[in-house]
Length: 222
Image 1 (cartoon, rainbow, N blue to C red):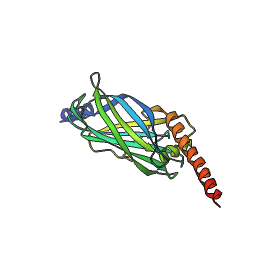
Image 2 (image 1 turned 135 degrees about the vertical axis):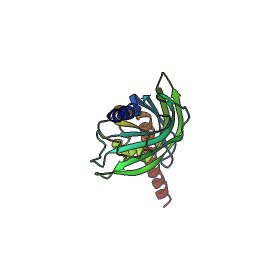
Image 3 (image 1 turned 180 degrees about the horizontal axis):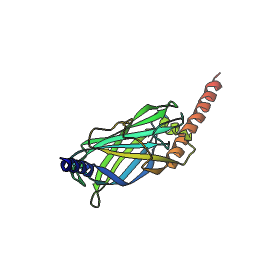
Image 4 (image 1 turned 60 degrees about the horizontal axis):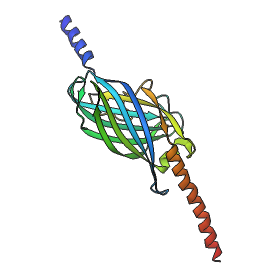
C-alpha cells in the first residue's frame, strides 16, 4: 500500500503541466482616428516551453501589470488580463488551433483592488509550433485612447516596463483573480508606446486647437 501511494504521488507530480522559459514581446501600432475612435494595437507574442501535459484542455492566463506584485496599492496601477484555451495532444505537444479564443480585459485600480475598466477587442490570434515542446501564441489587443491615457503617461511616455505572469492550468479556466496568480512575476517586458502616444497626443492637441478656432469663428458672427 505504501508503495502504491508513493507511486500515485510520483505520477501526479510528474503529470503536472508546466510552461517555462517564457518570453513576451509587444509591438504597438497607432490606428489613426479621432478622440472618439482612435486606438492603439498591441501585437503580443508569447513563447513558452511546455511539459508534463495530459492530453486535453490547457487553460492559459496572462497577466500584464504595472505592479511588481499581484495586488494593487495605487490608483495609478493598471493591468491587462487575457485568458484562452489550447488543446494538448501529448506531454509536450499541442494543437495549433485554439479551443477557446483569447479574450482580454483591462483593469484599473481603486487603490486597494483591481476594477474592470474595459473589455478589449482581441484579434489576429495564432498558435505556432517551434522546437519540441515550444509554442508561440500571438494575439493583438486593441486599446482605446482613454485607456492609453489611463497608464498615467498622458501621452508623454515612449515606453512602459511592466511585469507579466503566465499560468497554465488543466483544472479550470482562469480568471483575473484566480488563486494561481501569486508570487513573483514570470518576467518583465518593455512596451514601446511611442507610435501610439505621438499619434494620440496629436489628435488631442488638434482637437483643442479646433475648439479654439470654432469658438473664435462663432464669436466673429456677433
